[in-house]
Image 1 (cartoon, rainbow, N blue to C red):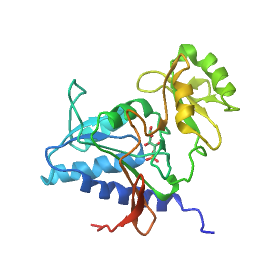
Image 2 (cartoon, rainbow, N blue to C red):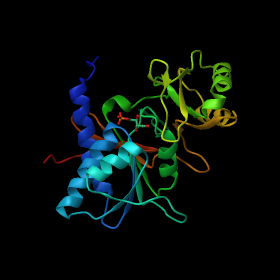
Image 3 (cartoon, rainbow, N blue to C red):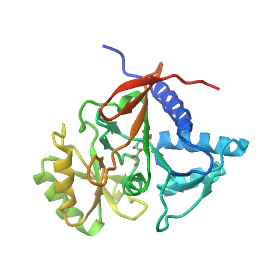
Length: 251
Ligand code: 5RP
């Protein structure tokens, strides 16, 4: 059995996949920017390319954090507007299953992340090796709810099989607020046998704004591809296709 990776090793893996994701970006593209540490590395690398003049892009950010990171990186940002299709959205994930269904929202930005995933022609997920799972559910599933409904949503989540749903806290006595000023409820469902059925049940609960399951479907928010660093290589994962290695060059 291999030893768990150190924080430093996982950070390095995030940097490697974030750098590799630049290969999915071309000049003239409009790029959706995810949220989280991996997405932040990508934003930094993208900014370096723009600064060097090797890429010219416009970006839409999935959170205030990413907007700030993009500004610092010198990226040109645009706002959502009717008819706008993003060429690619590049984002991290908390769990990546073999069919590229995902759990996202560890960073609290799942709502706008899902909007940008669906607004994109191509959704690319990037992650370190710890994100790859056989089945979703070890990572607590985040559910975004309007604060008023939170007590009843907690009851409903419990009856759906999450024994201890908990409002995410910023600090004791102060719930974490999303960019939409909603709450996040983190749920331990255990192994999620049927993510589509659970996702549908969650969306039926009044007060639930969105959940962190990103899934194939009529309007898929599952990724087209995922880049996962194994420590020595990058695996390119696509649904229904055997994983392939991507050799990478380090600066
Ligand atoms: C934020 C997310 C992130 O993409 C997810 O939590 C992964 O974060 P990190 O890259 O820091 O591991 O969904 O809402």
